[in-house]
Image: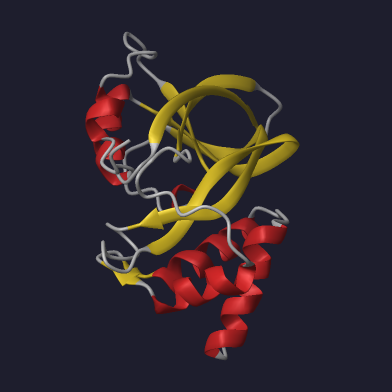
Length: 189
């Protein structure tokens, strides 16, 4: 699959005719909501875990030196905390452009912090996309993050902002926090 998934996502019609749709965010969508939304609240998704396995050629790196950003990877019984946004479907085009580097819009169920279970969508970069980097050790991931910079800024800012946002949610994420510790050891902050 091509890295630019904009055209594929625009063909997704699962929510056609809906006036409002829930969106689940688990990476920069937790702390950077640069799109209009109606409501925002903590949420979680089951059977998925957050991993720094997706390359970023367009935001936190370049085509020659991609950064690393998170995607979701299937894992039975896992629970991934994030943020849910109630949005109007007209917002999809803006989000499709933001998430174009390998992420697909998928319909799924997730839980809001008030106990409601809702059907909505999530952007996931699967292993079949051209920007997928796959697993690596935490130190190796931290080194790549420390060295990467793209149009949206240093890759290290993405990691540090995500870790801070997860702490603000009261969420423990061993993968993210281990990479953060490695990055801090590398850069000395």
